[in-house]
Length: 253
Image (cartoon, rainbow, N blue to C red; front, side, top):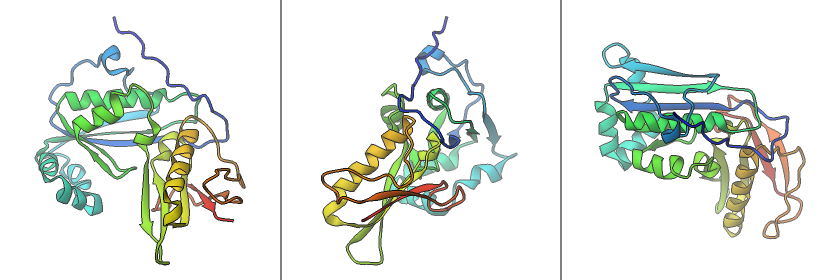
C-alpha cells in the first residue's frame, strides 16, 4: 500500500499572488508506462489542473521538432551534443503543463517533480524546462530536483545576467518564479562591486516568494551591503518575452 507523500507547505503564504504555471517537455521512448509508486516518487500523480500529453514520431513530428530550434537548442548543440543527439533520436515526447489558483502548499510541484522523475525512469532522456532555459540530464535532475525531497526553489529558478549599455554595468533578472505564481526580479545598472550582494538579494526574494511571500509595492530593501533607499516596483505583463511573467523592478535610490 502506498503512503501519501508529505505536504510541501508555504509558511509565508499570503495574497494577492498569481497563478502558478508549470510547463515541461520529456523526450524519450516510453512504451507502456508502469504504475507510479506514490512512496517511491513522492507523488500522487498528475495534479488537478494539469495534463500530460503524449506525442509520437510519424504522427506528431511537428511537436517533437518544436523545441529543437532557437537559441536554447543551439546552446545545447554546442554544450552537450550527446544529449542533443538523444533528443533527436527520441521517438516520443511528453508535455506536462497546467495552471492552478494560488495555494498554501507546493504539492502540485511535489507531484509533478515525482511524475517527471518517474517518466525519466520509464525511458525519458531529458526534461526540458523552457521557463529557466534548461535541458536537464537525468542524473542532474535527480540530484538537484528530486533527491532533496523538498521544494528547493533556487533550483527551479535561474538568475541571469546581461550586459548593460553603460560599460561595467550588469542587469540581473530571474526566470522561473511563475512556477510559484510570483513575479520575476529585475535589477538594472548593477556595478561589479555589488554583484555578490545583488545575487544574495535575488536568492532571498526567490525563497520568500516561493514559500508564499509577497513583495509589496514600494517595499524598501534593507541589506547592509546595499545602499539604503532601494525600492521594489511591480511592472510588466505575462507576455513580456524577457520574463514570460510579470516582474518586480528593484530600483536604486
